[in-house]
Image (cartoon, rainbow, N blue to C red; front, top):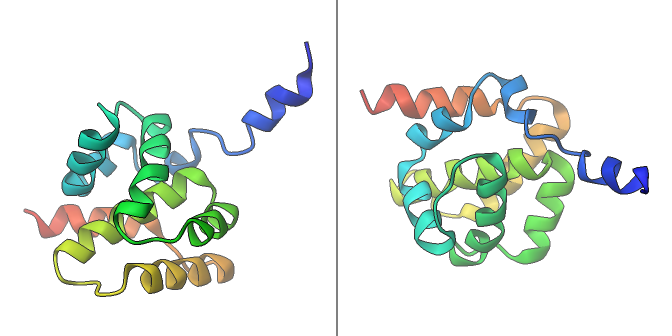
Length: 130
């Protein structure tokens, strides 16, 4: 029974986005196209763990290089990176983002200086659909 393995799995807890003010269900409502494609690829998404697993597969489909994804998860954490990928995908298919990789780089830069607000982006997408 090694406790170090337990701690390694808890580096990026599932509650991470909740601290930013939204739930998995809210993300799912804000990013329905991403959720649909990710579900087709990976099976049903029932929570953050499923989203993180699916996002690892989705990045290649939407043109994000594996090393870029690796840097993003190092900077943002795996859950927030998955949310960022979902938001970027939604904006890309809506014609709002023409370079998903560049957009994600911009999000990472904002995170570094403390100006990335994923919850604002999530709720902005929700209010736009009403």
